[in-house]
Image (cartoon, rainbow, N blue to C red):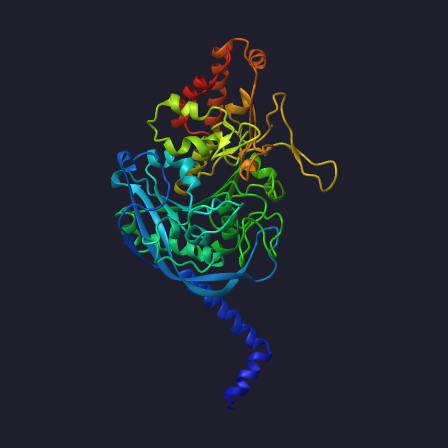
Length: 504
């Protein structure tokens, strides 16, 4: 029997066959999104991205910029976005885009360790910033990683206010150079980030990397970018399958929405979102005290989940979301800078980017050193299958009332118990916290440092500096043995401890 085409259309639209066709169309759309490879062009000259206050070329690294263009897919939820992170998505439209990549690679192929770190650039300041590079570049350079920065979000290109900060986006920093860039909106940022990884994996990838033959690609993002990366891991990675592992650095409790992403949360997104338990590839999450409590945002405390075969979470006591290393040391930390200058940069300070904080911000460098260990551990996990050490959780106690925020459980010196133990909290010279500061839009991220007075130092270390350094060295050795600090950082840390002790 022949069926008239119009009648066939009515049958398909009115019953199960139409649902099947619709489902197949969605699957086809996801498949097309998962296969899209953009084009690229090299851009001569220095890119607009503040990577360092020193010459990377003198350290054997080459910096290049490329424009990447194509057609990106937006996603929408297929069902409820649950707190367990097991999110399913379907295509929600497509749009052309043109963005940029910045590549920092070893000039000598023999130095390349085979791993590319691909950072989702942070736009909290209203412009592109590279906080993961800032915090972990020492480990990347000495161990021979390649690094790629991706302008995944619209604010970095066109500008906009996040947390009230108005930076200088690419099109204002250099209108002529970046005139060709065009971002259709952050709903497309997830696929733009996928396409960056897919381009690096393609036949063209070796050309972008100067002929280097990459074996592993680590996706990385800090703060606001980590919130987007939480959504990426839960919703997009199962479809895209681009990256070999994820370093989620300083996320808060929620995740970015798919349709109209913000700093955290959005329509249909729970206040607290765990990583999905059925991860495809290894994920290491690093959490500071600020992140756990959240301050003005929902804290990671509500998104805690047990480690699994493919996940590790390191909560680091005595750390702030941003600290002295972030604001004052990272940009000049070349690995050969005089240690007395580095120590001076780690001294307690309350002035940050022209803002006067009520208290000195968190100044202990364990955030930086533990992040470097996290990167190295994740890379080893991908190379060998050997997972990083599991870490205890920071100790907290619930609020008195159901809606009250939790609080940290502190030792006799005021430092938080539990978590990744380091000598800065186990052999302290100050109370270190990730919360409790005021005095500007960044104060809630900067934490607090309250140095001990002479009497307290004398009580803790009656043998003076020699006793302090002996105890510090023992605690440092324990952290290194556990894998939370790298052996390569031992000597420098001990020298900084000696320079930073102000007791008798």
